[in-house]
Length: 74
Image (cartoon, rainbow, N blue to C red; front, side):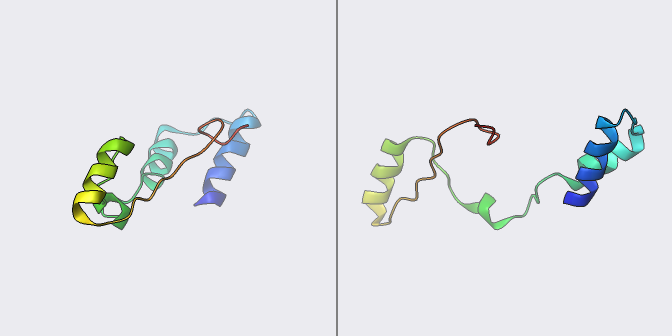
């Protein structure tokens, strides 16, 4: 899939347009799997809420933190 995306980006940078059908195909292929396992995890956006639930259930907390631009362009 990365090669397909790269081909479209390179074509776009070269001034070549893609058709609506090509765009729709690429858009469908880049969508995340709706049945991916990580979607079943009850993610929390509040550390305090997660801490209270973890303490109550005796489970650990997994924290994903990053610094910089959300697209990785730092």
